[in-house]
Image (tube, rainbow, N blue to C red):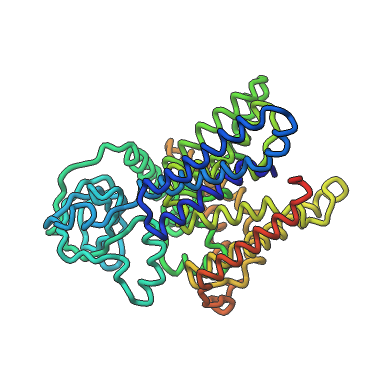
Length: 491
């Protein structure tokens, strides 16, 4: 892997982290930016002859680091959500307008996440009774009774606070439906795609498959896990298969492969570039419909780079694609750096790129079957070993049966998802095939029972939360090991 894009993304992440921890004002980021530009101008002007250019070439990373650290500080500061005190100058109004981002039905009623107007993206999580509120509604809520997320000192509150603050949720509160007034409707394209997703989910739910299977398909195909009950989520988590329920590179990769299979007639006509272009458009539409999760956006950017490389007949470097995807995501949304899904996605993919192929002792040409089997085992071990600290930090548990569960189920997932996509496509045009519905139900039942049998409930799950310093040390060791094992290639 070339380290060109790696330096900017690390510097950008460092600037975002420093700005977040120290709450730096936006103008402090201009200092390293000006210094970086100054160093760059100096190096260019003093390196006009080849000898001087060679001697001073090693100093070029310095101005890149300063420039992107400054960009990170400025970007994070300008996009930082404001508290109600900061937004309204210490005089908090009795009520505020909010844009509803999501509505989740719970046993106690509804959990509403809404963005508060005038706060640069600050959100409030509302617990309320049953109502007719939906995503995209503009509502007016009273500010009395709202509590700051940071003020929750309970054990559960301290555990989930990092994830809530990373999502921009600064306030929580209980508000009865009678005190929530609907003011109007947002015209954002985001909700057009959400309504399209709801229509697809309705088509899935109205098909002949069972409810448990339809809830599972809505989760792994549409990114909507609201239908999954807590017991099912715990089953997947205890078996080390929680990543199957979250849209990620695994799902995007399966969909990309399925699309290329469907688009083979275009390649037969000699228009192979068109097939990749069409696949890119469909993948981005899919990511938009499923909610633009950080992990799926990252995977789609990397896939886009790979397909463009094929279209341009240029070699693609997975490490460069990963770094470039992270750079784009963090520039447009610096809060992604603190999102658990984004962190897990980047760490797992980065570890696979750095270690998986180099740890495989089997030659691809000599023993292709053994190579893929060994590669699957190594990839599972590498992905889990690299991300277990983050899993422990955010979810306070470490599943021990991840290896057999992943080795048993992941090879079958591409076939199951492709089969499900064909079934849903046929059902949406009124063609119901009973044996396909029964096959999907049977496959999901076998999958769930296999995970339950392997994990034995919570018997093979360690309840432990790694402290933050432990996470940082482990990631630093991973980075050092990745550099050591790939040092010859980067020279």
